[in-house]
Image 1 (cartoon, rainbow, N blue to C red):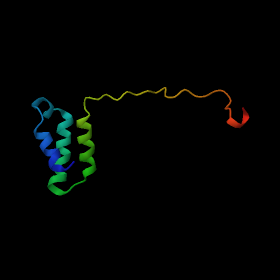
Image 2 (image 1 turned 135 degrees about the horizontal axis):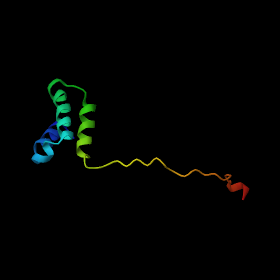
Image 3 (image 1 turned 180 degrees about the vertical axis):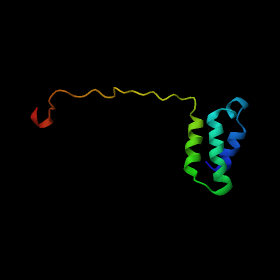
Image 4 (image 1 turned 120 degrees about the vertical axis):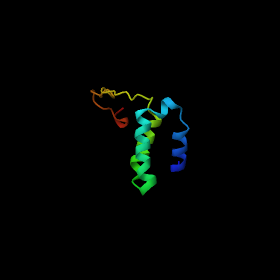
Length: 77
């Protein structure tokens, strides 16, 4: 994805998505990159966040259950 692609994509968005805070942040991060050759990493992060704004990340604190028994090796069977 190039800067031109990102700019064309953001301008082609519907009005309600275009005015979303995620896209406003992404556009603000793209401007210094285009105008002054600023850091592209921040712009990339903000564009990816804006693309995935509808996806809610679930936090699963429990994770994998621990193995409480004694480990059995293949050679011990």
